[in-house]
Amino acid sequence: DIQMTQSPSSVSASVGDRVTITCRASQGISSWLAWYQQKPGKAPKLLIYAASSLQSGVPSRFSGSGSGTDFTLTISSLQPEDFATYYCQQANSFPALTFGGGTKVEIK
Amino acid sequence: QLQLQESGPGLVKPSETLSLTCTVSGGSISSSSYYWGWIRQPPGKGLEWIGSIYYSGSTYYNPSLKSRVTISVDTSKNQFSLKLSSVTAADTAVYYCARLDPGIAAAGGVQHWGQGTLVTVSS
Image (cartoon, rainbow over all chains, first blue to last red; front, side):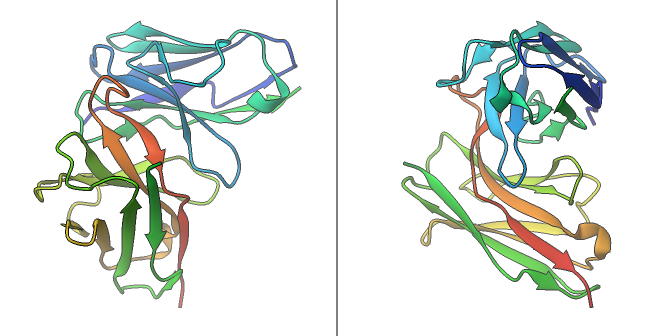
């Protein structure tokens, strides 16, 4: 089974900050990686798929990079609506999925 | 506009079987382009994939839950269902149904989710 490890588990940041979240796969997954944003009481929202492709309607301040085992989600200039929890998900073994443990982005 | 809606009991007793149904509207569950899945989230914790199903009935389960999980599809009703047996308090979670898209539009990501339903395991 492929394990996904996210870091950090939480980050405190201010509006306008650049925030970087990393996700590491236990084995190579090429570019089969997605990123989600989840706000309290809501279903996750797909932000990035195929490691770096921006989902339609998602602001361009979100970007994804990486391939193989190491991936990054970057928010270039944090906005108030970006305070949320972010998850990575591997799709290399689709339709079996694995999610990372999550990263909570909190207000500093 | 595709919509997914979970339904089922919100309270299940320990050792009993949790049963949920996902009704799909605005699209056909028989489309050859997609898979359908169940994902859960215990209160305050992360996301866990439970299993996936294709319209033909092919199933894929999380190894950690495989012995207790059954996912089925009813194409005539445009629904798919989850059964989780021998539940304990650890199975208390929000359960989401979802459409899994392997194509270029989402590359294995989950673009469409149900709103989620909280199932509590308690006597």
